[in-house]
Length: 77
Image (cartoon, rainbow, N blue to C red; front, side, top):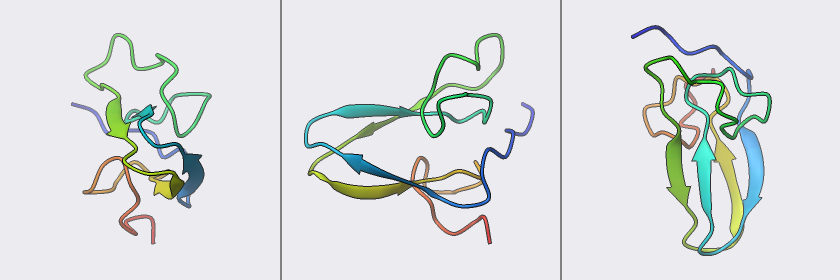
């Protein structure tokens, strides 16, 4: 499997809504960062589902190196 493209050097803050599902781009090619737009088709990458358990601000990984996908763990530093 190839390495993902680094989409951002910082986390991407998003206000999520309780009960809503979000699909994080794991390949780094999506034009809708941090979310999947289907750009991974034909690769080994798949989007990662995030299910919001409460409405709040979360920080999705932009560098695509986090060990806690899809959320930022500081790997971009």
